Length: 132
Image 1 (cartoon, rainbow, N blue to C red):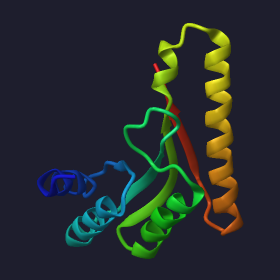
Image 2: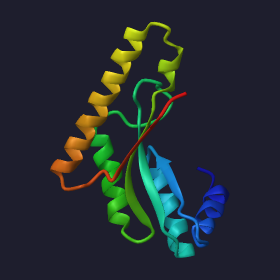
Image 3: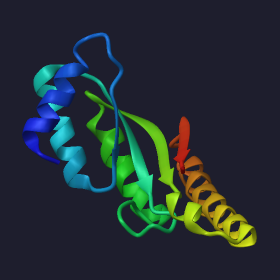
Image 4: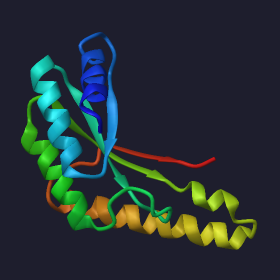
């Protein structure tokens, strides 16, 4: 993330806006935390789960835990909100059974991650997904 863009984003959170972001690496969390601390803002943070696109996101419960722990440990300024997926690659599958299998796999993977986090007393408050 570009530091200038992060500063603009975090500055918006000082207004009456609730700002949420999605991250998939610890560097994003570090930069967001620095900016939120500087501005005295709260930023709601989701982690991105890669559910088959291969462009961004984490893949294992352990990777998610590492990000969630960093967010929670930041305590001031960052609020762990939940998970985000994007299964847009399934829209190009013309075969409905292939789509169904892809959605089931996405549900399995996200479910595994949520169960893992719950076992560590880290609630996934919001589970967000998208596709066209």
